[in-house]
Image 1: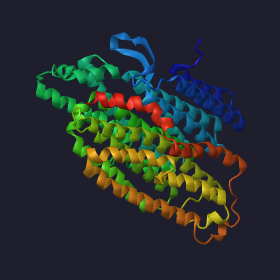
Image 2 (image 1 turned 45 degrees about the vertical axis):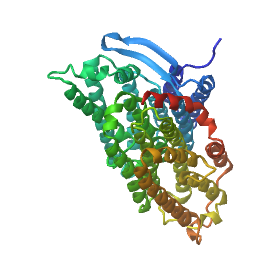
Image 3 (image 1 turned 90 degrees about the vertical axis):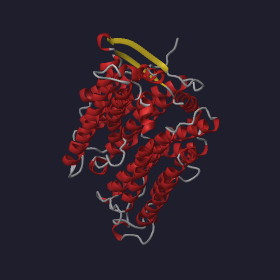
Length: 516
C-alpha cells in the first residue's frame, strides 16, 4: 500500500491548518503552535514526495487529472517535475522560518498565522497546477493574504506599500488573464502541457490564424502580443527592471516574516512562470525578443546593485540585492533563447545555464529569507533600528550573531563553499558561450554586490563599538537552534550541490530538448 501523500493532500494541509488556527487559536501561544505544526506537516509531506520522485525521469510525475468544467476545457490537473519539486521544498522550508521570525507577534496572532498558511497553499498550488484556470486561482490566492499581511502588520508606511504591491501585481494578473483568454478563444485549451505541444507542432499559430482577417503574418503578430501580455504579468512578479519599483517599499514596510515569504518564495513565482509557461508556449516569440530581454536582465542585475550600494536601510539593501540576484536567473533564462540547432556543445551550455537558474532560485530563496530573519533579530535587540550607520563593532559583543549572519552574507556574495556560488557559476558558465556580451556586462553586478555586502559587514560588525549597544545580547540557544537548519543547508549545498542537481538534471535536459 502506497502511503506517500499526493500533491492534492499537500495543497490541502495548509488550508486545513489556516482554518484550525482561526477556529482553535484563541491565544498567541496556541495559534503559533498549531500553525507551526501544520507548516512542519507540509514540509514532511514534501520530503515524502521528494523520496517518491524518480530523478531519472525528466517528465512530469505525481500527476492527478480530474474533469472539472469540461465545457470550458477546465481540468483539475496537477503534477511535478524537478523544478516544481524544488519550489515545493523551498516554500515548505521558508514558511516555518517565517513563522519563527514572527514568533513574538502580538496583534491578532491567529489571523496572522492563518494568512501565512493560506499564502503557503497558494504557493503550492501555483507550483503544481498545470491548467491555467486552476493555476490562476492559486496565483491570485497568494496575492490576497500577502496584501493583508503587509497592510495590517507592516510599518508606518504600510498602507501605501500594500496598495502599491496590490496594484502592480493586479495589473500583471490582468494581462496574464487576458493573454490566456485570447489563447482559449482560438484553441479551446487551458492546459499548459497541451498548449506547449501545440506550439511545438506549429498548430498554435494555425489556430491564431483563424482570427478575423487572420493570416500567417497576423498570427505571428497576434502571438507576440499575447506573449507580451503574459510576460508583463511575470515581469512584475519577479520583478524585472523597470517593473520593480513596488518591491523596495513593500519589503521595507512588510513585517519581516512576510518579507521572508515575499523574497524567498513569491518572487520565484514569476521565474517559475517564465520557465513552466512562457518558454514552452511562446518560445519562438520570446526568441524574437532575445536581445531586448537580455538587456532587461543586465539592467536588472547592474542597476539594482547600484541602488543597493546607496541605501542606508538594511531591509532596502537586501530588497535591491534580491532583485540583483533574481536578475542572474533572468540572464540564464533569456540566454537559452539563442538558436543553436542540434549542436551538442551549445545544448550542454544551455543545460548548464538552466541548471544554474534552478539552483539560484532555491539558493536565493533560502539565503535571502535567512538574511531578513537576521534583520528581524537585530531590530528586536536594538529597539527597531536597522540603519546601516546605527551600529558598529557588534562582533565584539555578539560574536555568534556576527559569525552566523556573516555566513549568510557570504552565501549571498557567492563565496565558494557556500550555496550561493554554484548557481551563479553555472549560469555564467552557460551564458558566456550563448551571450558573451550580456555575461560580461553582468559581471559588474558581481563587483557591486561584493562592495555593498562587504561594506555592510564593515559598518555593522567591524570598527569601534557603538556605546549604545555595549550590552546587546548575543543569540539565544533557541535562536541558534532555529537558524541552524538553513545555515547548515547553505553549507551542505555549497559542498555537495548534487543534492539538488541530481534531482533536477533530467528535468533540465528534457526542457532543453523541447526548446531546440
